Length: 137
Ligand code: HEC
Image (tube, rainbow, N blue to C red; front, side, top):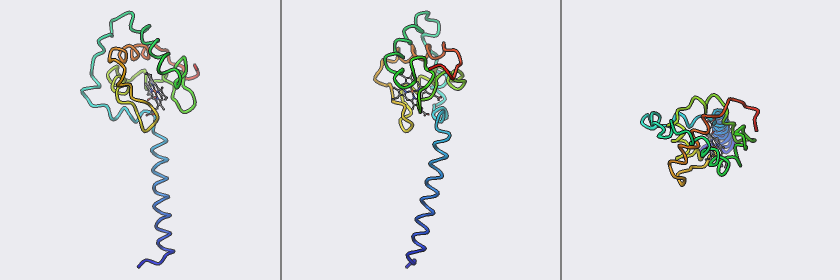
């Protein structure tokens, strides 16, 4: 049998390793969803890409469902990231559609699979219409 003190040491080591890996996971949390998007979803074409009213419709969806966390101008609030960032602007419409449908549940982003798909495409158009600005609230 292992003496108690060595056993305690082993438990402590395991706890240290676990907390260190939790830190690594937390520090790169925003954006890690991107690596999960399947290739076929990345390249999906937004059927509203040429629809002139989609941005305004997406702004309404955003105000209703998203502003409470991301801020009324999508500039982020607390641990809820700004969406006026290069990552979001450079993500393809298909990648954002995938994120909205699936969420990033472990990091606090709900799934919006309950919304009609067309509303998700609208809000994607709205997000991509926003100028870059991390300070907008
Ligand atoms: C309950 C709070 C909450 C609500 C409501 C919410 N989000 Fe999020 N959202 C988050 C969090 C937290 C993250 C960070 C997730 C991560 O890092 O994986 C996030 C991440 C994102 C990202 C990716 C940002 C990045 O930098 O990678 C996008 C895009 C996004 N949300 C869009 C939306 C849209 C559009 C809506 C409305 C349909 C919405 N969110 C509603 C909490 C929320």
